[in-house]
Amino acid sequence: MVVATLITLSVQGCGTGATAQARSGTAHDLSIAEAQSVYQTYLTTSDSAAAQGDQAAGLANLSDAQWEIVHGQYAALAHAGIPVPRYQYGTPDFYVPALSGYPKWFMVAVPRHPLGASDAVTTLMTFEQAKSSNVWTLTGSAALEAGQSLPAVSRDSAGYAIALSTRDSSLLVPPDAVGATQAAVVDDGPASPAAAVISSNPQTTGLYAEQSAYASTHTSHDVQYTFLMQGASFPVFALRTADGGALVAYGMFLNTTTEHPNASLGAPIPVPAALSPLLAATTEVGLHAVYANWTYQFAAIDPPASAHDQKLTDIAATGGPSLVHAN
Image (cartoon, one colour):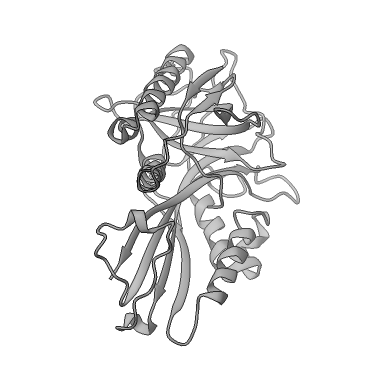
């Protein structure tokens, strides 16, 4: 077993942003052995940062959704005086696409649990080197939801995974539209037309119900609470699955606003204790509004377009608050 850190909160998650285009073929610009080395280096450096509580070092090998989430968690832990968690990892399974050029990327599925605990949760980690002058970073990770399992990923005769274009039309939903489909249900609930192609689960109707319930108890004649899931400029990654579908990894934002009607001046709006460490300045007061941004990384199974009675299904998620502002 390997000890390392990956601070994550397993939670729920309009279009997505940057795409990681597939250039599948026989080229192996990134070998499986190189991917294994990148992964091991990450475990070593991240664990060292966690052991020392070194935020700068802990963020240095992260990017995109993972950077946003972990940055917020470091702030909350430092505010509470809690040591950075360290984790123990099991045997990894590598999904390395046969690609040429940049960006280079790969996924790792690995069971993980905090030191001192015994129940491991499979986590899907995505690593990327955007260009030759960039270091390798962990761009996102998503913890498998209870009752879900990873699909079988297609591999070529050399053991390399098959990458897909984010605009692949052979799937029920093109990978670069998966986030927008999920967001439509999170924002509008089961009545959304998008509910016809995406499963009801904790990351769709569950998140809608959770946010709607919170809004009903935090909205009054002088304070309004609203929420909106929207896309981010994070890359989208897709791998062909054995059934002709895809395993899609992507990141999203959830924005929440608590404000006086029309953001008018009023009594101070309290900032939840869990969010206050993320305020840019401790002097910020919500006389008009309190804005919170949550960052999420998801993994979803996207069935082939030819499949009957199958829906897009989110199977993994990780996220947390990443920005708070009061004015």
